[in-house]
Length: 142
Image 1 (cartoon, rainbow, N blue to C red):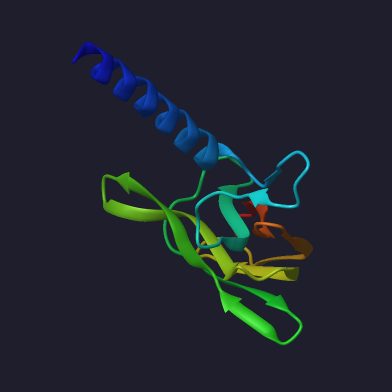
Image 2: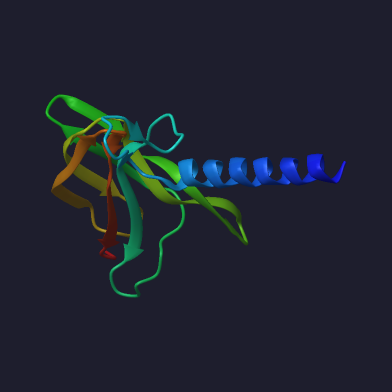
């Protein structure tokens, strides 16, 4: 019985090690092979944005309006990370362009701040889908 239990532990450890390796590997080419190991995800956003106040450096939580544009393609920003505050659950980061590489212009409007526009945000296609561009946007109070 002890041998069976030991064998199970070894196999269990091997499975855990393999699962950890696969979940933390990011597009690693296998030596001598053309196969890629990619994270087990369905895809990701091409543009990821987190807003900050330029004067205080504080992370700005809460709603804003914005979009990314690449030629004729337009996609609205949507909340992609949330924060619990005294007033409830509020958005803290925003994303757009699901699994779509491109060169984007990002526009943002938020009450109490000047409109923001930034261009040349390039998200490229890689072997695992899209390699996103992640930026910190510093908004200027009005």
